[in-house]
Length: 294
Image: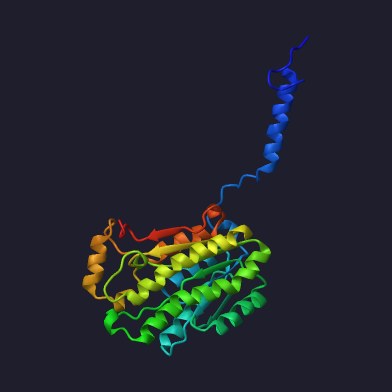
């Protein structure tokens, strides 16, 4: 007579084996299928992205990288009266279209929520969908805080922080409904390390960290990833034209890699965060600073 298994009334050794096997199967049924290794960007073909401030610098590099992965791209630019803004937008639009994707661009002022409320539905109507938002648009109005006028403070906060909120708020219902979305905010190392004359800029970029974490908590149950990159000193037209050489030299010296970054360095990380390779990353801050903050 089989005495049974101690602690499991009425079971036998064969029954124990069958019981354990059934328990394992039941547990496996409850576990989501393991994700397949993702080829960075390959699975994004056919997706649609909005990139704010996409006509130049980091935004342009992000837009072109997304297009290279087969993503249709709509980008904004600020029509501030500088003829270079429209020329840069036209050049970027042409390069996107030459990559064989659908591309749209439109002037949009991040400080004006009514323009954002018009832009996002327009993109949805033209492209037939929306899956990725990269909040990159930003401005600087550097000055010592005791000489900083209200306009300089308000413009930077409204553009860099409020604009990211307006765009995130506008896309959130759509991302929640489709239960999929990627949002990447572009902050700065100055969210962590202050510098003379950057009270407005540093405050706006630090605010993006809080916005990112809150949005990640609220949108996570809908399978929406929200992350932020924090670039260091990146070689863009604004940087090379607007920052004194001695500050750039000091930034290069403070970087453990001993160099300034390139817009593509940031775009590569943004691309990663938009792929399923980063499906389990949300609310994260990733410095792209060559070790500046070390």
